[in-house]
Image 1 (cartoon, each protein chain N blue to C red):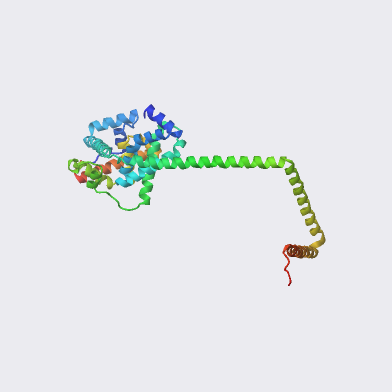
Image 2 (cartoon, rainbow over the protein chains, first blue to last red; image 1 turned 45 degrees about the vertical axis):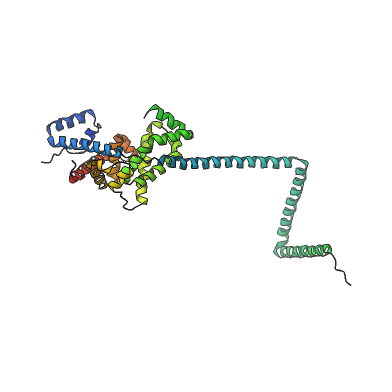
Length: 166
Length: 177
């Protein structure tokens, strides 16, 4: 004969997971049903066996040192990364302070003047090229390049020691 | 969980390596037995144990309530063991004799029930094995099981029941019950 009551309620009853009312219903049924009592006995026995069997398993003695060594390596690498980050930020701050110091000094003022002059010259050149049109812009650029090249060659020749003709 | 455990976890969260080492010592068998129950292979279970503690070290700061540490640890262990099983899809089942020898116990003095239980557990699905181990070995409540396995409590209850009945039937077949 198969008892219809053999549901998950029995497991919950064994585990003490049933509320008062449901627990009473199961208790009442189990008191009358030998089949369910047997199922509960089996479950309790299975519980004992699983517990005893797996509790007999112990991890090998070398596992803990292995775990700690791996974690320690990771810990060191994290620490090293933090130190590196600290150094990087320190360098950025020092660099910014040096740049600010230079810019605030008379040398920095002179550099600023040259920079402004350069920017202004660049702007003027662009505006000039825009005003004269594409063809004249090309002519001016090519002429400038040729002129610069000729100047460079001349300077190079002047600096080169002259050969003595016998 | 004792107050000492909670203090230990808080200290480990702050980066104290001695506290972490003590924590590993206290919980290594908890993790190992869970992994072993799921994988049924000694060296795989040890690898999963190592991997689990590394993950614990990496994510311990994210643990809000130290009292939930056992279920949090069980969740990481179960996930690692199931992932490991997926990654190493091979039938690596250690023989019972091999398991006893490697555990340092004399196989001739072990009860046959243990052998039967291992064989019966092997025939259960991973889901059933996992829930059985978490409940029978660690005694997690249904609410905790639902949290660990990310399942509704009703599913936990029916899965556990079916797992128990299946294990009982397997043991019946082995002649232990």
